[in-house]
Length: 315
Length: 296
Image (tube, each protein chain N blue to C red):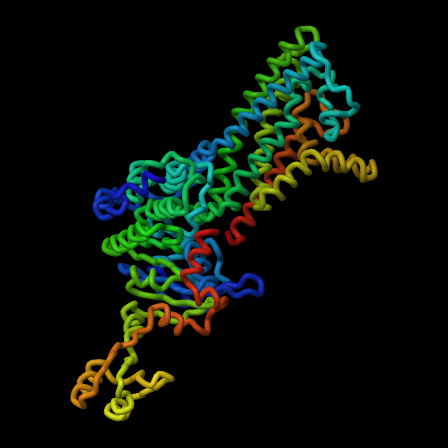
């Protein structure tokens, strides 16, 4: 359980996190979503005590992170995959991490095996691809058998197989009733793994909701109807609460307030031919953007989230 | 890399994690001793750092032997006026003190160990791994003390041995009439002191690295304070000031206990050692204070 209580963080005049409050509940995968620069990484750094909140406080399992006796057993975090000395082997890196808190060597090798790095365990970390570095970072996070696993953009730089692997791993961790807190700026990625969402923008909480709710919001709210007899159909279904829009295309109607099946039945009863009848669903991206539209630092990044991802992995 | 991508086994997470050892929090307390052991693993697992320690040994032994050979007339030394260690006020190649001759490499070796100390800290800020270590050790200070203990003890053992080797080799080259022995007054103190001085400079590097966090800046400060400031201060300050400041600089305080017969301008051996240790204590205390306060 992580409790973020009215936390703000200022760097000089820049506000990175602004009066943020939310909880990460045990036993579920909580997605931490927001555009680049929204304050996700800053929040995660504050959770494990690397950055000090300008105001407010954060507790992990009821205590400040700095007061935990066995921090790696309570929170396993991956913040930056490349944050390893490039001259040190993967195994020596994990061994040094494990030694700080008395984790047995046996578990270092098991963890290397778990992330699939056994065959390259003695290679210098500087020679690793970004995907391999992500796996090493995840190994470091899992080393202490932590109750809370916190990963910052773990799928960055992973190939499709690696992405599937991460999804499986997160599901497995949640099934072991661990608390999983994972950030992403990609809505489709996060909804594939998370049950619960915390959405921030410009350091402020925008929404905290179950993924199912966001998905419902994204599902068909209007129906596209194409008919050679569009005008007659419009008269047929027009009623209170039904909004019908027509465009330049005279055959096309956009109907809000009636389900597609109702429109189809009414058209059949009136003997009207339909060429097309399709519930128009907005994408998860659209639903996310509707939520965050007013809270974006760099709107162009959001307009092309996939592009932003490839920019980052190339860097 | 190809091994990973070709191996289908990497996706079979559930089967693998079922076999993994579960840990019990009662045995996982972070202790200073555990962090020291972790820092030892970190030091020995980066080859370039071991190479630097080896290079410092080679410099101490090699330059000591070379200086002795020059003094014994076996080879001709540098003829430039005031070459070598002139900036620190000693030119070991021109010395007539047989102990100073065989310790000729210390002036150069101090740069190597000082830079090593800086890198031990500043590298972790540069590559971001300091966040790993502070995440694992949230109280932070054990990490600084761990580095300090591991590097200082390692260098103390290795560099005292190197200085003894340099001394014995140098005296063998000089021969019985020009050379001296460890039993002579102040010699053992100067030789052991040189080794410990180098260990102290490693610690000096750690403190500067932790204070500045930036590799280039910290190395510049180490080089400047060991080599440039002692020479410069004599040029720009009035003599009366210079006499009151110069003996208290880290490198000149070091000379008071690394030379057999400290010059009149230097402190006595004991006071020199105390001033040198004082510098280390103050700098480390400052580093510790900032380490706790600053965002990582």
